[in-house]
Image (cartoon, rainbow, N blue to C red):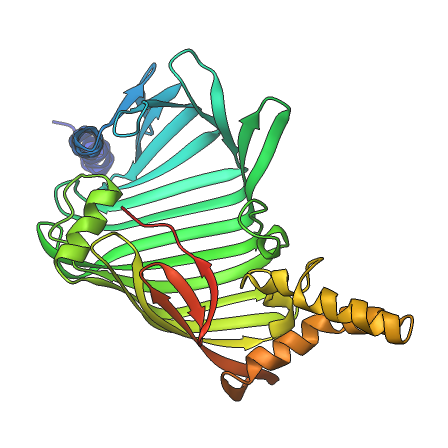
Length: 375
């Protein structure tokens, strides 16, 4: 054989080897993608099955699988859920759900939801409407042994549909909820750490104070669960009560304008499902929190301050208005005497005991409200 031909073949061999190697790598990568895709779809189906056991039946309209070569994507367009554990059955519908996983982590599912979302009856009449700019969830671990779940939402709105239009229930510039098992396992005595973060949130129907924008950062630990198998939350709370469990609030901070509140403490449950326990609340700007504490009745028409102001007006006209205008700070100062004076982020503040006794709320010895039972 000609020497020049041999030289050309020797020089071409590295190129042939590279082409063959790339072809084999492509075949192996494709096989890996299909394997990871199967794991991701099996994990997603397992989550759907888990939800079905709790009475939440998911439907994936026009499912499609894609994302090759680096991701696995399962798209449901449209998506729906039937919530049979609610009475009557609630039907939830949204435009699209995209569930994605990286090829190297097929059991970590990241979902994106496209709004709006409606909740209503079987005939399509909506009772509630939710919408957002971005809604993502992530689930780490399998449906049998979940390890961590997170939810993040931007520009969220949640409205009740009424005969006269939409009633705003909740708004938030940003909200996050993170949950993870810190002790035990999903199958036995899990202890769950939960973190809730709210930015620019409003909830007009709860209280006049929450109708104004506020930020919150709350960390609490849930103890007393038997397991984390699918079941309604009222049943879970019954488990917690029967096991002598509790909710430990390790950090809670809320701010609205210049008013700041910090709280820590532990709450349990009575046999009737009411909260029982105590929180130590440190408050700066207490006078702005009077409505949420239920003390606005003191300054309402006909209240004790209003009656006193009427008597003052009869003595010196106009003196009653001065009393009314200063009623809030005066009441706040009086309540402040119930607690310990301190500093909070460089401002004067007071530490107050907030007690829950069979659902009734007391600030010191003063009753300030009632919390509905959890089951």
